[in-house]
Length: 554
Image (cartoon, rainbow, N blue to C red; front, side):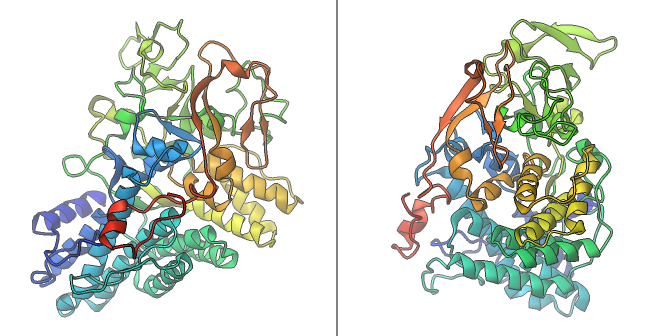
């Protein structure tokens, strides 16, 4: 279980997993001392678990990076003046600190994996041959995962496959296509040595996790057949499947469910995060920092499977009724119960019910009166749990990086893009939708219809899971969805009509007569000749004397 894993991991760090004196400054690589590891079986465990620990980093104070990535997209917003917000609204410069953190942390993680791979031979006689091969495969999976992030965020990046020393030549950037080929080859070679599955223990790589990573990388790089085959291979192993309750997937109840394939691990007293503090409302004791946008709310279908601009079930005066159940399960809506409190943002709602006491009591409503209460009128439910309400800066909920529903959507999209539309595509989409309480997909649809549907499903099903940034980039729609006004709801009135949604489920409010009542959160700009990639850290360009070059127009 994750607790055993985490305790061993931190025992390893305490025993001396620190930066190597021989590491080179030109790339942010770190590793334990080559003179001390790996001479015992325990040190092998310490080493590989230290590699997993290196995946836990933050783009912003005490929030795991996947939870912050959607704030650089159209579906979520970070209200503080921070580098993540600058990446999301188009005002970032080449000195952006979040971009630098992502680059640095990924290469640090790669450094740990490289060190293990170069030195684990010392333990070959101390552990079983199967476990020896497994640990090597796990380190390669970790390295491949980091290169996936680097390639998608930065494009061409240095491909480092060994521990660097001062004597090594300065590296230049490797073409993204070559990095992608390296990732896929690594995964093909590592997969057979990984355990087939490990349901309930989601902090170590398995064959299913390897296939899932391969499917994601192939999908992101338009290798449709490879993506579909990898997703199928992961599903064929069995053991994993959809969890019955979508709403509980992202709290303590569902964190070891059969849907979770790989997660970042947390444990009170060892390593924690502050999601509940930053994601929850003022009344719940939080700071309402990361919030969903109005554009996100209006992307959810009605229960008849039609978008709100086409469904007869949609009533703009009661906009949350007859909607995809995932809306209320992912997002705290006005009128709902959130952290045991009545959640209301109308300025006249000066008092609301507190259901955390018996009998329930009326309390002052800071979600309506606090100047820093949610700027959009909504809150994220994903990654929050009422168990953390009284200790919301010490959360131990795991953060999912791969789950079964994504495999189904990857398979469906790859088959659709490859124009291999058959019943298996419909069944994959149906499985995700029906689990949430939505109708099946009507048969006999065109490629264009199904492309639009699977893109909407990814936007809805995977909201606030850190995947939206990669989707809007590879679909080449970032220049549309990341340009213009980012909206929150009006606190005092409803819109008179539904916005019009395009083929990517992006709302257009030009037809809504009172669209001006919405709160303008910010105005975004997006330069398609620049913003499809993040900037390379300036320190890397200076240190390598120009061999690592900057991305265009940064």
